[in-house]
Length: 330
Ligand SMILES: Oc1ccccc1CN[C@@H]1C=C[C@@H](O)[C@H](O)[C@H]1O
Image 1 (cartoon, rainbow, N blue to C red):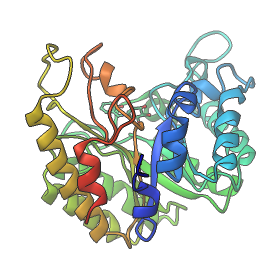
Image 2 (cartoon, protein in one colour):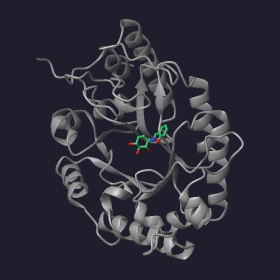
Image 3 (cartoon, rainbow, N blue to C red):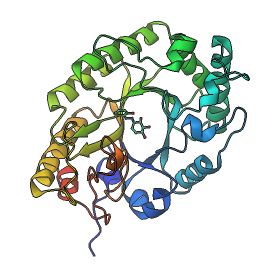
Image 4 (cartoon, protein in one colour):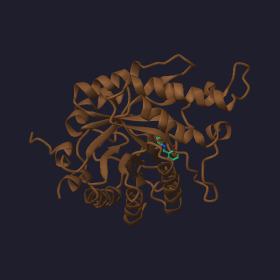
């Protein structure tokens, strides 16, 4: 049958186009990923708890598989993520007697994790999400309350970037977060990144996770966020894009497939969003989906456990959805 247009070719003069893969979808979605995309991100296989489950015991089995896959298929590779409050092993914050670890020890452990991981994959990963999600969602709080912040103090943020830069001077280093287009959270992300730049911290970009849906955020809010981050002279990368067919507070579980109305709205949203991304091609260096096709998405367990979602450009049979055509035809 007629060859499909390829996202990586359609956007060749704009930005890299990526997909998150895991140790299963690396095989199940291999053909789609290698034909349509030119960048991948490990959905889970490069997170702290996966790489260093026990102090000093690294497990690179699956991360090495993803790196080999990327090399074999000439795909760029984003590293996700070095410092995060989730999917981080408990041992990191405890000493031998199970008490909370002291500040110096925790920072040393953070450095060792970053040095070991980043130097192993030096020159193979074009961008790292050095720090993920340290900005608070609460309006009246700046930094998220986490064991990292409580035990190490806010210096862990800048220290993580310095350590990563020393381990791989060629990788571009990103601060990554979600709800990044919400004006209040956006301004806090801007404040953090601006303060890092003022301290000459080696940070090169802001990762907008872009876990959006078919209703929000508005194109205006997305544009204002891109403009604000770009005003710092930084790269912007869309790092985890999906368009949930449910708004955040819609907890319905009755659907076995998306309604026509949902698919029409999703198509409109993808078309508008990619028109905006193309307008900012000089600022946006990659656009990565947090998956590849509707056969698998983390959204089928978040925020409602076991509730199927259909967020991507390809359906569960890897066929292009109407949204695909509105994205590739411009
Ligand atoms: O952690 C969150 C909490 C609330 C909303 C969204 C997020 C998004 N968080 C992302 C989503 C999926 C994970 O696989 C990614 O590593 C994480 O960056």
